[in-house]
Length: 563
Image (tube, rainbow, N blue to C red; front, side, top):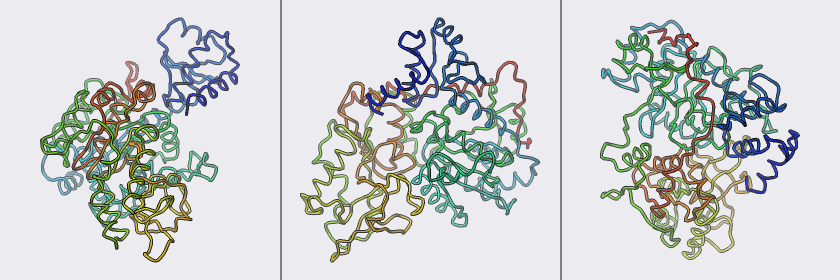
């Protein structure tokens, strides 16, 4: 939302609340509106005088009161976001319980078959949680084995419960497709359908209401959701309300990635703090997975979260892995590598862009390239930007590349479509089964001007049938979440100031770097990297407070039913 639109919304909101220019709480409510526009779920008010004014104002109420704004402790909310946070925390807490009676001997045998004899295996521990508890949150960076662990969990559960109703989902179509492909690559006998969350919940044509909810639950025994860092607060609220009380829930994700596009940062909030494992759980789990750390201060999600720490993609010597860890730890300097896997370029230069597409261009220039060949080569490389517009941004870079293609006679001037054009869908079309983020390649027969777009799943469509779409040699880092590429070129904006300040942050760098499997080129001055490292995309929230164990909360977080 641009500045003028934000100002208009702010004024409309204040008018609707009846807060005039002389109202003493007007400045803090203005701050709340701005925070909400920037996807924070609440505003922390440190000033005691302002808190006292808010407590007595007619539009502000305590939790549970029917007022437009809610004040809890020093956090001021739009009432619906307070409700979402409180209910999400409560539903997760309620679900954090044993799944039922467990045959420990059979469980030990199954875990050993799938994971081996190694006792101190975090993947085995994650599987133990998933098999014995209603709620399991598996976190970890790229290549730590989240998907392979889930495949083994599915095999063990389906072996003991052949009729188990399993649903798998992801926030975006691209992430859903990638999860499906990843599962198939590990075990082609497991072929569950992976849906977007919107499709799973049955989003209606109005785009606001959903088929599934408290009155019509999703008929499932096990729900697995990948890329949970991308799930915003309202969507997490909808999902949890639509799940049967008896269903297991497994969430997978990396809390260090960029937060969701919409309000909240649920996964990061949930993982914040020492959730760990209780003494009772550790004692009962030791025969199965060996000794595990015991939390000093239990929370309401104790025994629910397992972080996978060993990377199977990046060795200790991996430059990309070291760079990702450095970002996590807040190190401000960008260190390149001698082996060429991490390199830098100070400034964006359009004439250098095509160098990263040499293999792709060779296919186009040689002629006779098929859609499958083009897709395979294209998916190896991606240009990632911090922003859509500006210099440089996604829009500028895509135009620059297409201009270069015209110079090489690989694209006719003025033509929207051409052989080899990469196309990204930008709007869901459930009738066609195309989703925001899906990428295809445009091709045409030598004697035809009738172009078709081919997708990785083998489907193809005439360009006239496509939903909203755009060229995607370059895309934003946000759009790349849930994807991986051999080579990544991260292009940071050359601009500084307020606009850049909002876009460059540590989570953006981490997300971009962890999309790369083999090499990454960082384009931009070192000061922009340092600028990004000094900022965080963390959002203000009361979720962690809701999930902390208080001194009066005596509910015991039990072990695996405890194995």
